[in-house]
Image (tube, rainbow, N blue to C red; front, side):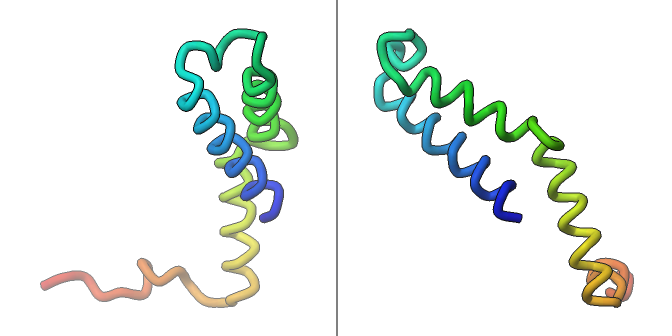
Length: 77
């Protein structure tokens, strides 16, 4: 869970930095350009963020030992 959260926060922070610098954020004169590339790599490395979410969801479901809430709800009449 921490890998997923940390990588998502790093990407968000770098995107904010690039937005602050505008077009200058994409050139190599500023370190935020490299940080953004590195942060995006963290979301892909050792499984994408989507795969991490699936793994976490399955682990939580196994620990809860119940069916997901959307499967327990009655159908609308």
